[in-house]
Length: 239
Image (cartoon, rainbow, N blue to C red; front, top):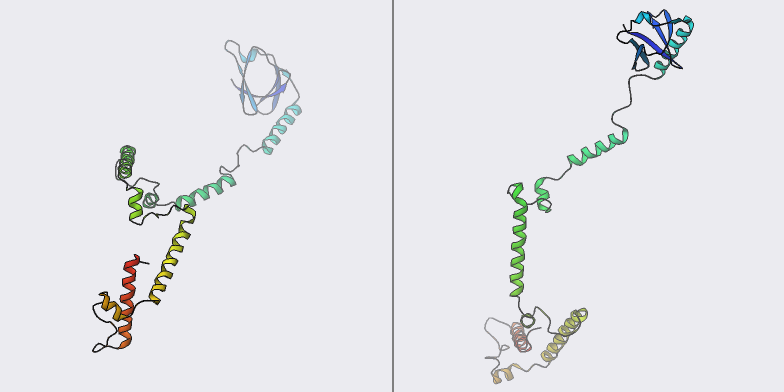
């Protein structure tokens, strides 16, 4: 038989029967105590009839006051936890993650940015395929380095400058040489020989300034200047 009791301290229990009477019992080896939230359940152990346990009658007001204290405590502390599961900070973090997830780049964009491998191979083979591609590029680079042209070849093909100046002033040196060549060409053009002299030396086959049917003198002089400039450019190696 189970009876609802309330613990009073000092090893004593207050037990209520039908909500109208209270008893006080001394905790002995006759009883087994079971804890259930704020109340205790007292049970008689086997081979010990419950009626054989000694009880001492106590006043009803004491039990009533204890019952009111328990009810006040239950009203002050609700059993239902109303704390929100998702805290405000976690809610903001969740909204931020949802926005980032909605704006995430596509697989095609990740491949263009070389974040994902641009391959149709199975995931288990992508690592081996990438290593093989890197090895192929390395072998091709080594082969090209072995057959690279010499410095003299690059200078002859005007890829490298033939100057022995420091790299920091080679650009200024090249610009200076260009201006010097232009000044030399202008100087020679200002002292160019007459068309008759060039025809006599065999440089020109005919006088380009001579009148031509259907033409004028200005066009003839222009052709003469172009012919002279072309000839000097050939001799100087170009501006």
